[in-house]
Image (cartoon, rainbow, N blue to C red; front, top):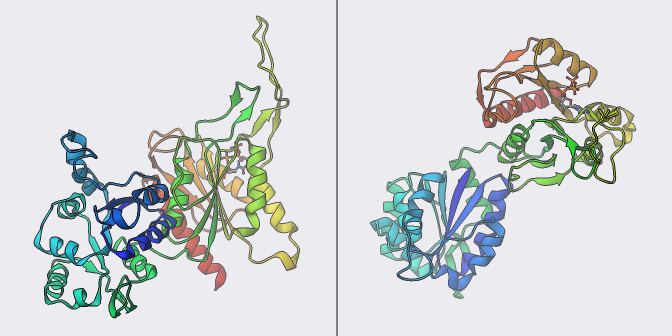
Length: 411
Ligand code: CTP
């Protein structure tokens, strides 16, 4: 989910840096847009480093007379791709432009062009805030559905006291998350997610692996962040960008994944094991590249550790004093036949609270697909067959079950 953060030229511009971090912690991808005067207060480099995207501050590229088509229509592209435009701080001048439909720079044209909700967080001197023109601009913006996060009262940079100070980052974040419809039902939970394949090296050049893309596990990690969980992502090699805000631990082999998961297990209140862990690895990894020959060659394979079984063992070995609360454990079952029967057998043998079964032979399901068609299987009760849906939606449905099982365990 992408949002744009507009920064206009006021002392409070530096506080917008904190907002970037707060938004990222909830899995939002933030594009920062600065007005020219904002660049006098904070350098675009600060925001670029924090957000991971270069900051947009000019309408037609950096050098006059050298605009190209991309730069001329960039505001439309950003306008269409964002779910909200937040302007913090918004100066009196910027609000006047917004109220009267002026579009003389990137931020104001973006505000005119975007269908996304607009959240304006004013910050200015008390006299400017109380000025009749500003009051009427605020009223006009409100009437049009713009959400205004009222400034706080207090000591202002100009030495005066009164309303005008940028609202607290908490108040701004609350308004943004509410506007985006982000739930907070995993607040206080730490979700440990595994994702992607593992690679088992044969020699420095070759390895054994599988077709997992990591999309399902990354979708669970991102959905967890959006629902206010702390997320630890232990990932095998994938081509995906990790959602900003996750604590990422990259691993390669099943053994490395087991080590990483067991090391972080005591922090987790929920474990979602979406990784496609290799079941075997070469008994020996060659230090040099294996040379070819004309004779057939056999590769001796050794089983890898079953990570879910190690998790269950580690939990049952915990001394009572160490037992805070048993994490809820969700596994996946990739099957080609007897879906529910095989999934139930895995659920029982691995000691899980729930298993997400999918038939990997279907084109709308399993490896590398953007959609998934899954069945939830629980220790008791009937399996629940879900209609085909995006991996993001599957991720949210899994987390809905996590929330349900958590509250059932508590009562
Ligand atoms: N899993 C694991 N450690 C392994 C293999 C799998 O923790 N060495 C986990 C997977 O992350 C998944 C679940 O166990 O959550 C089931 O994985 P799956 O590949 O479907 O089953 P396997 O246990 O490997 O059994 P099989 O390959 O025989 O179907």
